[in-house]
Amino acid sequence: MKKPSAILRILCSFLDGLIIMLPIQMVMLGIFSVSMRQAELLFQFLFAVYGAIFTEYWGKTAGKYFGRIRCMDVNGGKAPIMYIGLRELAKSLYIIPVFGWTACGISILMMFVREDGRTLHDFIGNTRVVYYFEAGKEGEEIGNK
Image (cartoon, rainbow, N blue to C red; front, side, top):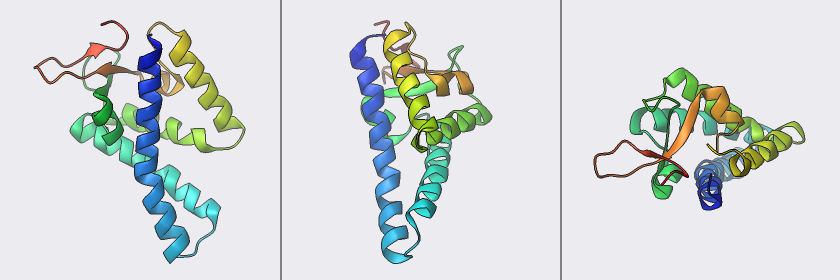
């Protein structure tokens, strides 16, 4: 996989995280005065729900939309919602200190080292990330342009 493609995926993930995290942190900490851990748990849950719902109904999240990438089944079709949910749940666990950070580091390393660029959450969800072109094609595998 080409390194700019892996960097693009990382930037898209950060954008998705910010879209969910900032409003939740402001509302939960500012208005409802809950603890930071409770706000983090809600963020993890909503991050997984956001990713699964947007991927199921629109084929991509907001971060993937701006990066012009999408998540597909390893065979090139639409991934089932159950697998997308598992994939997004695994991604939301990357926030957990030590275990999650280690898994996130392994996933980032896999993006740069593996030829297909699949990560831990891609293997859990049986998915791959592809470039999305609007000219009628479903996508072209990242790194094989």
